[in-house]
Structures are given as C-alpha cells and as structure tokens.
Length: 131
Image (tube, rainbow, N blue to C red; front, side):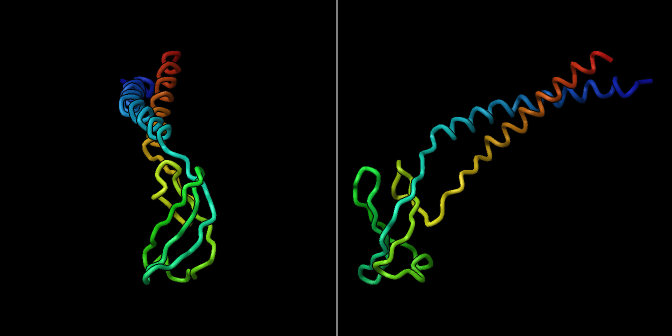
C-alpha cells in the first residue's frame, strides 16, 4: 500500500518539469522584453486646431518640435491654446497618451510564477527524500 509520500514524489517531480520547462524560457523572454522597452516621459503639450482637426504640439527631450493629431473622442473637451500633460515614448515620440502608460509584462509575470513553482517543487522533492 502506497503512502502519501510515495504518491507525492511523482507529482512533485512532474510539477518541477511543468514549472521549469516553460518557466525559464518565458522568464528570459520577459526580461528581454523589459530590457528593450523604451522609457516614457511626461511633458507639457499645447492643444491646437488646424482645418477642423485638433492636435497636440510639444518639444521632446532633444528640443525637437513634435505635433500630432488626435481622435475625435480625445478632442472632445479640448480647447485650442490650453496645455495638457502629455506622456510619450522617448524612442518613438509618435506613441503618446494623456495618461502614463501601464507597463504590464505578462510574459515576465508568467515566467516568474512557473519558475517559482518549479523551484518550490524541487525543494519539496528534496525535503520528501528525508522522509
């Protein structure tokens, strides 16, 4: 008759492989994504209108003047000449937003979770050897 220790051993070993095999590559991939991501910064942009369209003008960190048109939904409530806080990607200034970006890296989170499960199951397997 097999005891709980005999049943738990193969389960922990299987979960070790289930955690490590996809977890480590996902962790590496997530770290690469995080490393290559550009920094976003905030600046003050001026609202302008041109030919019935609304847009923003701002100067980036390298003192290059930038401007972009906005969608009709974003343009609602904006008055020409007003200033807004504008967030933009310093590597790609055409990527901007009125709110700070949310940098969720799901690949990195999933990699951490699976790798942690693999580590915990490995430690659990070694502890199980003591019984």
